[in-house]
Amino acid sequence: MSKPDGFFFRKTVGNITVPTFNLKMLVWMMPVIFIGTGVAWFFSGYLWVSNAAEAIGTVTKISTFVTESGQTLYNPEFSYAWTDGSQTVGALGLASPDFNLEIGSQHNILFDPTVKATVRFPGIVFNYFGAIVILVIGAMFTLISLALWLWVKTIARKRDLKKD
Image (cartoon, rainbow, N blue to C red; front, top):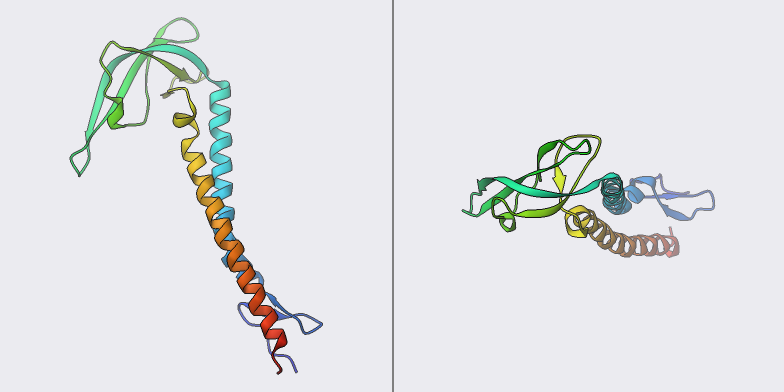
């Protein structure tokens, strides 16, 4: 007589022990979540950059924020020519200690030509770095889940070798 199905393992018709759906979810959800989030974030960044227009922005104002550790973060605001030729202002929406730029200095920026909103610096670091980090974490979770899955399959085989 076979044992009733458990939370982690169940018996098939041929009395073979296999992992349950619950165990599969526990082992594989973290890589799926991280890789899915990373791909979505990367694709979102790609769409934004591919639809963006490039302009030369002049720093007009710098907002500062002081963290609890006493570090000063800077968020520059840029004035640039909009698609219709009018001057508009946009901030990075991202603060960093490295953004302590001189007021009046000019930098290449990207802006969305359909919406007057935040601007971005061009380049991989500013547009894809977060997505790449999430994808690397997802890859690490995949390796961990693969090792766990092999361990789970070994446990299932050992259960089948035991005599009831």
